[in-house]
Length: 308
Ligand code: CP
Ligand code: NVA
Image 1: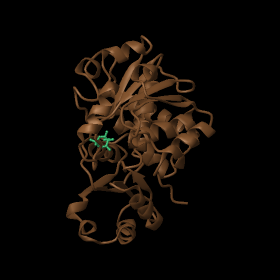
Image 2 (image 1 turned 30 degrees about the horizontal axis):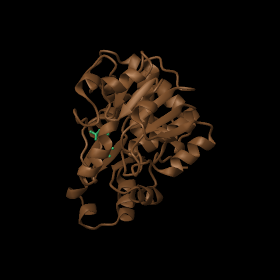
Image 3 (image 1 turned 45 degrees about the vertical axis):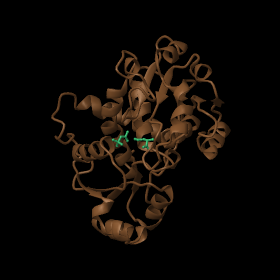
């Protein structure tokens, strides 16, 4: 059966753990190699990855492009505006055509229903490069980063401060699969998707909503922030005002454990969701996290082709 990666649960906890181990091994094996040189075993040699972007991207675009090259394959990167998709060709027809020409499709889209339709009509793996609902590839990189920095996942206390968005939904999903706990500090009206919370709780994770940022951060092993205005959302003064008490600053970091780390998927807005002293400070892992998009995306690709 074709393996699509629309959300983390498509792979499940065991496969995500295996992906992270694979990423650690492959990263280690090519230390100081040129970034564009293929891995010695080139496990996806001659494979072509089609990438469709309906929204802006730096990390997802570059990391998947480098990832497929390092696995021995090649990519075609398309902005939907320059495709017939952007002129009204259907998602279903696009899926059927790309399935005849390419070996896998990665898409970043504004509407999760579109990726579901793409997957339903594709005969090759479809990978979620971010939708309005979730960002699973980012979270594989985040978990890899935490493990690399000796943060064991079972029982980990992760505090999220800010908007209940797509990145948080995937973190909550990961909590259920990997058995860690999420403390969500979020103003009323900006909660994450309830279905992810229900599933994570059913799987045994503690997922707690706080309306007070200090309470959410108390005793955390990791603090995570993201933009207050995701792509496709309108900038609203009322939202920015509601978010301000949830800014990650030194006072918030002081509430967490003394060895707590800071993650942010980037791009960041210094002075909004995070202060420079935190994101550019000693507890921040954001550059490892960004680099790990390559290593994590290689594992996602290998999983999609049944190699993990
Ligand atoms: N974190 C992330 O997905 O970055 P891009 O939007 O640059 O791809
Ligand atoms: N929540 C952000 C993540 C960007 C990588 C957005 O959707 O714009």
